[in-house]
Image 1 (cartoon, rainbow over the protein chains, first blue to last red):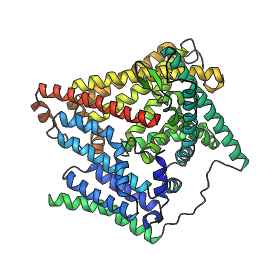
Image 2 (image 1 turned 60 degrees about the vertical axis):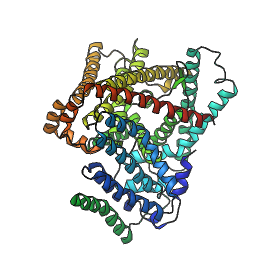
Image 3 (image 1 turned 120 degrees about the vertical axis):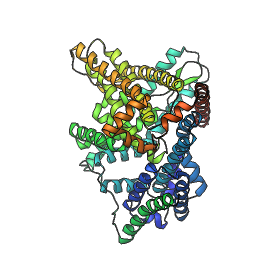
Length: 243
Length: 287
């Protein structure tokens, strides 16, 4: 699956990887806010943001073109609406839509590709995002691949029994068969969740996940956070002043 | 919208936390993973076309609305963070549309009539509503934020959403039916005998509100006035940052032929994009 790429990137060892997650989340928010509210001189500002993000990716030793291509995954949806704007006589708005969605995705990708997800979620927790939501998200991510694999096995098993090859049955029967497969998948997931929960209780789970790492916000982190948060804002102010 | 999403999701999280002991966390997480995986199982509809489950209503019927909201919210967050799907700027509105409004709208008919004779119908209606409300809200937000859509495109996308919503309803009914055969206590049993009229009124109100939002959004004059009064528009505008200035003039200057042409071309583009995307996904999956 394609997620593994991101997982591998996030295990790098560059200076950017070693930063405290909070020192990356705060500048990300600043960048997103600056980007979302930018109106004048958007192409120039976008170019500046793009250059900054590319520099960060290169500094983190992440393959640049692969990262750029990955961020483009966000585009299909945005481009459709951008095209609608364009065709109904407002190319600037369409361009803004596409630029903003691509750059915001690239910014998020830069942070996620330099921070392993457990560390990132821990950073969000320390920034007061509800713990319950984060824990659920962490479990979701943990079991995503397990359950997906189970679904793939079920598809394969169905294919082995000749399901997609020749639809002898009526559409209604195949619809019911798919519903049955989904219900079985639901029951298995539910059962697995209960097993996981019992196993965790047996190991002393009290409703909190304890991270096995310690986060410390060092002066270097603070300096990076301040600089990286100010950079996009300063760039935007400068560009808008020039225009 | 991001600003509005924070308290709404926060409230649902609080509700879910109260309703569940913390120990239920694994259940919500694994069921979120299930919704992801459920997209791999295709339902045949028509010739060569397939659909898949969105899951909001199904989760609400099995886990309860608050827990379903939290699960959907974390699904959306993981999608935006890890899979570059949906976009981070749209995460707030998406959470409102799908995790809060979609789940609640989907649960309403079931909550009202799920215990009585209308059980199957209410499950179906819930599935339809959950998808439809999310879609209509998303469309309205796009319109409010200044994306101009010719009426033709709006009508076509609405009817496409309607078809998708009916499919979601049908799939939800089929899956719930199969689930009840496997193990009846998976699905919640709402109390019987809620007054029919009250429920119908609530539902009608919901529909009216959805339509109202859309109409208001499609008529920019009204929403602009409303937006100035409430400050909603400025917030929504910040999303895509699209000043209203010069909006109407440009709109009027564009002749109807151009609009119609734009609409048709846009439609063809949407269709082509969907087709290509579908092909690519299908090829990847069968490989």
